[in-house]
Image (cartoon, rainbow, N blue to C red):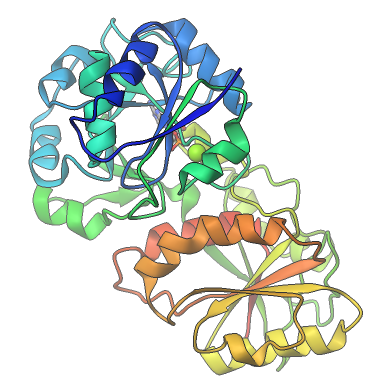
Length: 402
Ligand code: AMP
Ligand code: MG
């Protein structure tokens, strides 16, 4: 199949008619949103959803988010529409927020991965809204990457992963936010965030005037490592900082083929004992991992830099990659690849660049990547989202120094 890349400049672009007709006929179209690029098909057509799972190589029990262009479509797709959904839509739609509601009979179980709930979002991008309107049906769309690759933030990334598999990629340039939408589950007693994103729990709480929980299964746990020496290999992350005091962190309940073996793996009893399963099926899968193992280094900025430099120095014969801030980039002269994610503490820049940066590392032959933690501050609204994505990229390989 020939894949056409079509630049879209406005919601009224004539080309959106043609793309909408492809969706109506059961075909797939990749399109930009403000978060990442999506791979869209008719959400009401089980065969279209099957084509999406196949093109992505995605397990069919990992449900798709259904994208709409008008709030009235919520009543068609959801069985119950609580007041909370209306309030959140008023505040944040169109925007980077996905709501989980009980599904109506109209939505095939293939689209919802067998669940009786449906994920709904109204994206804030003219090409996305124009495409949904032209298609005349709600559009099921996961991120437009091959399963396990970083989500695409440019049409070129989509082309890398989907060339020959889909007829059309709509090109709206670089996306604005760069990490996927916040998913909030409104089917339980209390609203619960299943995937953190740009819309923080604090923002949701302010609108709902009630507590919003974070799925306990994705809360990052810190566990002290007591093994004094562990060498970093492709399979194992070092657990000891320069001063001998180090910690490891891991995500609960996530199958992780790259999980550190040795000391780090044996120092996570709390996390493993709880057997928590993330409620968003997609959060159970390993995601966003670059080809080379990535080790996230946390702690005061100077200690982080010193630690990474020491690793480069000690492993001179091995090609090392570093993901760092603009302020520190110049010190890593002996690294094979240095990728600047933005100014230190600039979380929107880090979010915006992260997936492109991870793809960048895949272009070179490197042994491993050290990532600075960027001072992901307590109160920043992208904090939980970035912590979560960095943890996923690191597959739980964390070193805490200083
Ligand atoms: P992506 O499309 O790549 O952004 O991934 C969509 C995410 O939404 C995945 O983590 C899914 O598991 C999650 N999701 C979609 N529908 C539901 C649902 N009904 N309940 C819980 N999580 C969902
Ligand atoms: Mg995805």
